[in-house]
Image 1 (spheres, rainbow, N blue to C red):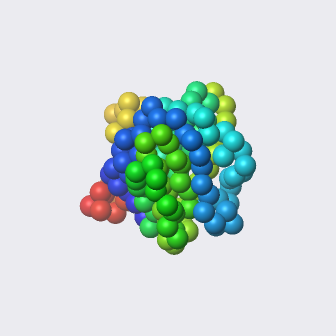
Image 2: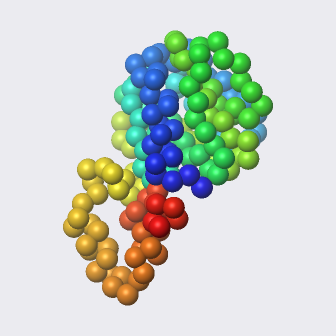
Length: 177
């Protein structure tokens, strides 16, 4: 399972296309498990013509924003990866989603199908994104939050507490060690 640092690195890979307009969305294997919660027609219609505006990582998930109100959520699962390829890129077997922009192809590659692609429209954060605790490297993560969380678990081993995703999203075994 990817951890915070791996997800942040993946997020930055796609950011080479910030500001570019989406010209097409290619869904390879629409029946793939990674799309189990996604309306693929809405995803295609919603992203084409929009500009890649921003991205953010929270724990083991990330979101790419397109325009003012399009949210593309990605969870890498165990084997997922984000790639940025030249605009003429031809999808490979396990490239489930390719967002073709003006100069880049943004690829979600997942050979084991443990990842997830989500899509939402609206000015407010979708519930699947807002329900994730603040990132441990973000502004919303404070000493007060940690102190309060630890007070309620005074006898818990520190590593066990650090692995609790509801407060420390994205911290896994190697980071907790």
